[in-house]
Image 1 (cartoon, rainbow, N blue to C red):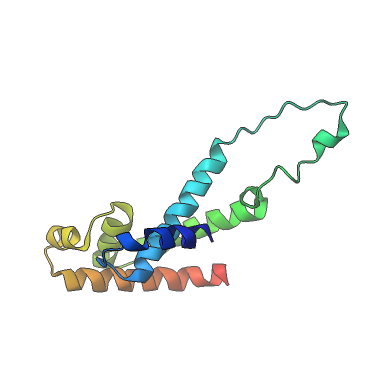
Image 2: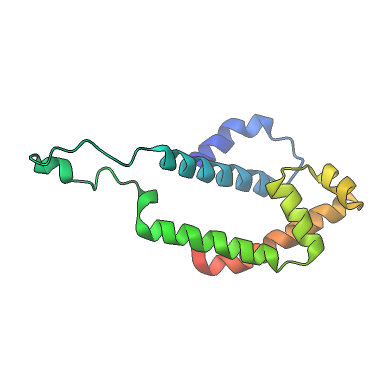
Length: 140
């Protein structure tokens, strides 16, 4: 929901350099990363009074992202994406890494890879499709 709100607020800044899906996907990924970073910054130790049993109710202090199941799933997703990227053909792997990791524009990638922008778009699309195919069983 937070990602959709951010996308809605940023809609006037959507330039159309990429597909709307890609733009929205990037917002969702960045929102999730920001959430994980913020969760890691929270202090883990609390000043607990051993005489006060009400302070031991930790259920209200744990967020959904802190559950063991969520942590395992996050790790599985990360490993699956990394394996999927590793198994991509070199041209697709290079294009998707330059776009999603390095944050390069399609034009910059085209210059770097010495190919037309349309080819870059196609390679990134095919790379995302391959990654999605590997990731889908984990998310269903």
